[in-house]
Length: 297
Image (cartoon, rainbow, N blue to C red; front, side, top):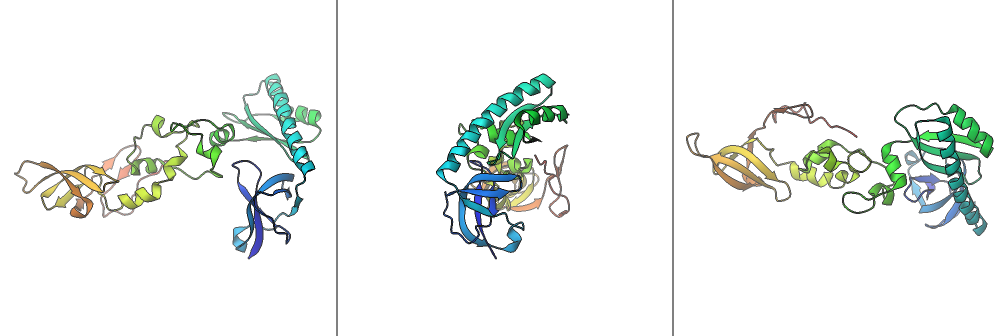
């Protein structure tokens, strides 16, 4: 076991572990820490705790000291310098005619490095831009290309639900989201309805996936052939939350099908419907080797 504290450098950024050096640090305390990219000013989100050795990357960087009022003032000054650097970089990008969109600028607390975050459709040759920025700021320059999800997290916005984006509000990290999650929740597979403003699948598809997986476990799919007390028939639709099945059944092959609703425990699956198209490959229940192909974002 190793003693750590968790420090966050952005409002909704990742939490990184640091060695408190035997000092008890409370949550919410501002601290100055040593990081891989230089000295940084951060906020303690996780107080002193012990974690397994496997849960941390050794060697742990150390907490230098608790931040002072002077440190807080320097941090505010750095924020103003970031705004100035942002404007200067925009001008230089236009000057060099580069196909890139500047998203954010970060300065380390000790001004040892300036990081410019940008998006672009492909690779960008920014060597001349870096040279010019280095001559202006007289410090190390790093240009980092980010994806559309990171762009949305930095810029923030309003989602289709009417609330501010989850990624910019409370999600510290992105989790994989697949089209299978939308299908499990019986949502429309129209990309415009299940995609966020970043153009990728909405992060909220992940929130209830475990619940829907449990609910779908015993439910048949549309088109499956089932056996009920009212006879055998084909599933027309399913209600995941109510755990009911709507099916057209008949006692004998000569009877006229009757549409009825059954509870899931009143239904026995005889065979699964075989569907083959570009996105999905569903197979018979006995064939366990073939599964739905996820389209990961």
